[in-house]
Image (cartoon, rainbow, N blue to C red):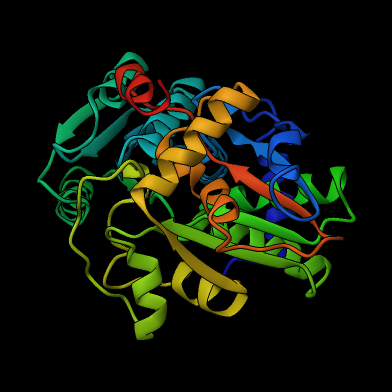
Length: 319
């Protein structure tokens, strides 16, 4: 299992590639919900999402032989872009397996970074199975999007930055998909103070980790069209790390509707002048809908995890 010590080591490994992102007070949200609300802007990473942390931490741990042979990953877009970016910076060949559901804006961004794209199936599970076959056949190292100790540790560096900037925080609200982000942050904060609350939020349509926590084991879910497309996909039938972390360390998990996600995107754009893709706005949606209700004295941080949304789709939501 990943450890808190590994998160500190990951922080050293990612320096020079990963930005320490801003933590900003949100007047708009603080006026609408009890307590004070802050936004952790992972959307300003150079690749547009938090995924750069985990991908960089994992790839920095590769041996020289693994670097020479190259890496492969499977992605809904943001992780693939992160792997492609880190691979280019480190001089490592990279292959990214995508489903045909991945928006063109994300495919194009990955290709622009020099990675080879392979379209592999209609669902994330099909693309992952293809990536595993290719990795074995071609001798590539799989950089898993979430279920890997170094990836989890890399995402957990967000928790260390939160403690640096706002040590008096009470609650962190985190988008939840495969669980690397939520699990990593929860591990970092739990090691500092078990009383700190970490709440995961996903969309109502196809929330694999939510259903898997309820069932006590990995559950395969149907993938739907959703504003939160970056949260789509399963957690893998042989999930080793993130399900256990999320089940043990998350204080609650909530689901938000498509309209609640859209309303959160509108608030971030119109009142905070921030671009957030749907999956990045689910924490804000949970606050606005009252599904997460802080106490009047709470200091709540919402992780805004990415901005990689097609401009036309963004305008159709916020316009």
